[in-house]
Length: 113
Image (cartoon, rainbow, N blue to C red; front, side, top):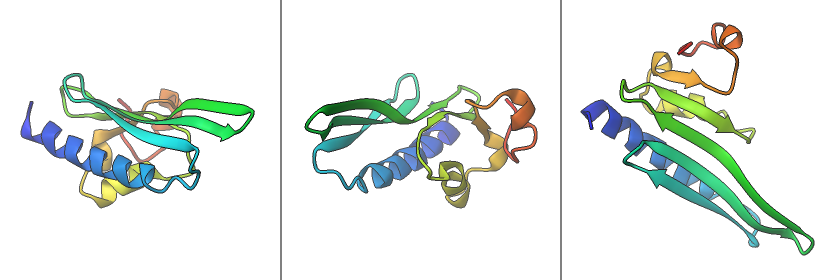
C-alpha cells in the first residue's frame, strides 16, 4: 500500500467515524466498516427505526483505487462529505463522484474518473 493510500484511508476513516458518532437514534446503529485489503470503507445504518420498521442501509461508501483515486460510490446523507475530504487535504482531482454519470462529473469540480 502506498503512502498516499494510507493517508487517504486514515482521513476517510476519521471522517466516517465522526459521522457515525452523530447518529441521534438510540435504536439504530451507524457502523463503520473497513475492508483495508480491498480499500472499501462504509457506514452501515442498521436497527429498528420504529418498532415496526427495520433499516439496513449503506449510508456512505468509498473505494480507494490502486492509483490512489477515491471513488465515492454512495452518499445517502445531506452531508457534503467530499468537501470534508478536501478540507482535510485531499485534492478534488483525486475524488470521483462515482454514483454520478460522467457527464455530470465533468462539471462537479472533482475528478471525472
